[in-house]
Length: 240
Image (spheres, rainbow, N blue to C red):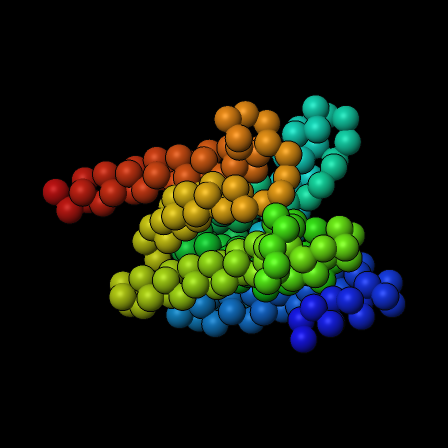
């Protein structure tokens, strides 16, 4: 049924429209979730909404800059949101200063919204035909390649939404008290997972069989681990 829908969208030249819809709907989902989570952590509704929306806008700008740098500062090239997760701590810090909220509260909230938007947004890649995997007999149809390819975008969507569930469990376990630990955990875990997922993508490999995005993923995991160790050290200092 999914392959039939993909073919129908391609035959009617609706790939761009489907991609845009799949990119817009997650904004509303993340916004609604952000408001709910903002209430849980006692953040005012208007601030919570602004954090989510401005955070989303900032991700887009960071994405453009990073992909521009990847092209050797020649063109903006392909956009991939995975390259900007590592910069969410910077975005969270800026928004915490703008809205005078604790960094821990803003970073915890952005960890959720980033994964929610990513998890639902990956379906745009399914219908558009980008971010494809290797040829696979049981895969999803790709109109650009005219072949069935490994459903790597669907796998990434499932992983992202599963991580949302894990973060929600951890947040509930700490009674929704913002600690600033969720974002480092997300960056570390997703960075490692994304590194291995990159080997399922049929994209250009630049060094040791790894793509540029694989190295971005390693960088993400390293930054997440450093932030996690720093947060643990701060907490031990407070306890002692």
